[in-house]
Image 1 (cartoon, each protein chain N blue to C red):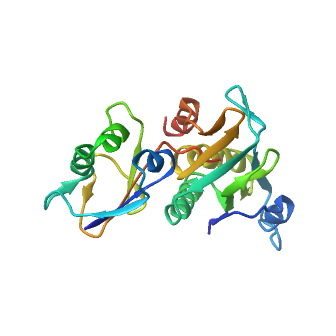
Image 2 (tube, helix red, strand yellow):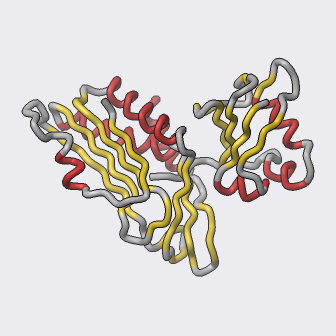
Image 3 (spheres, rainbow over the protein chains, first blue to last red):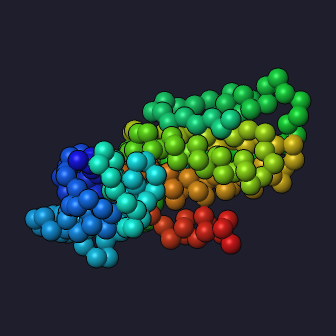
Length: 84
Length: 151
């Protein structure tokens, strides 16, 4: 299982702030996880549609599509940041 | 050691900056930046904003940015305080303080920390306008500002 977190506008788009999911396969990556999320119903497809801007962090470090995901990881999705 | 705080409360700029120099005689330069809530953005009046963040990652990201600044310039200390929650126009959002022996390092590191914070620290602003509340869009100019430090 991995913990997924959603923040800001992306959280509002998918309507969930946190969930637990099982990994698509033994050797998972962010890319595979996102494909899985995209295959859910409408708002998920929409939130992760090509051209939509989002960022991902794995275990609280900025990550990319190629970043591996292992059981127990915390994966967070959010829009480009706007602090300061 | 970088000092980083994320908090809903306001901060006393003078007192916080003084903490970087108190009891020391090796600081020759203290550079600082204070970010404030404006009453207008992207052509709309702004009556307030709410700052959301990613607890845990935010602090790590800010500590990492300060550590990068410490390794790039000859600094004595760094301080970052960033507020979260509901804020009104005129209120302080962020304070960056950098102490060094000389001004060049302090000025550069202060700007670097703000540029990196703007593009790498997980904060999001939602602003209230007469047309309703909206999430602030990230700016390409912020990416450009951060990018120039890696060129």
